[in-house]
Amino acid sequence: MSRSPNTDTGLPEAGRHGLVTGGSSGLGLAIARAAVRDGMRLTIVGRDAQRLEEAAQSLRRERPGAVVAAAQADLAVDGEPRRVADEASLQQPLDFVCHAAGLSTRGRLVDTPRSEHERLMAINFFAAAELAAATGEALAQRGGRLVLIGSLATFVAPAFLGAYPASKHPLAALAQQLRLELGPQGLRTLLVCPGPIARNDAGHRYDEQAARLPEAARQPGGGAKVKALDPGRLAQQILADSRRGRRELIAPNKARLLFALCRLAPAWGDRLLQRSTRG
Image (cartoon, rainbow, N blue to C red; front, side, top):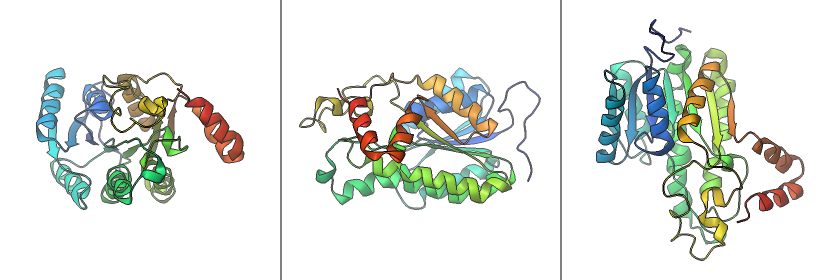
């Protein structure tokens, strides 16, 4: 196993090359911004070519001299995650891969068609699994890091989130298998499970989908009674924890109690989850 390079510039990510999916907006862009600020050479991936290029240009402006490439791709398409990873690696081997691209939705589970489950699984899980398959062994050889962005719905399934929880739950299994299979060879896998992220359209983005659902369903996290997380601060913590080799990052940390109770006493866990997400 060879450790990834780190030139003597005082920046913790100097000399490393990273790939961030969903890097044109939201938490993905915040992670990209933190990585570039820390000296990382970066390839960001997004579906919308114009938004992607605008994000890449903003990153270059924020840190003059930064090397930021933009790779347009629809990661829901089989083969596209591997393609962008392979192409990025041609410029420089990857040391850091973060799957931050994701979709969320609202709806009653019994009203959710199979096509909706497949749509969310394609981005939230299948793309993550394909990226892991494409990059895991090479990252392990370099002592590199793989970050999977889940959510609180990776471990619990609040009401009225449609296909979203089922598409996020498998990330916990993927992360654990990677830790067991490639951890001994050097891969550091971090599963990130954040609560609602602060954003400009919070409370309105699901108005149409949640029109006939309880009011709490319109809110971030399905009405979760937690403070919205600052994406910039969370991004910095993600990078630092991945460097330390931490295995899970759950924010807020108090959610761990809910997760444990849901496993040990499902009836009590359901009651607590209902109380925690009531509008």
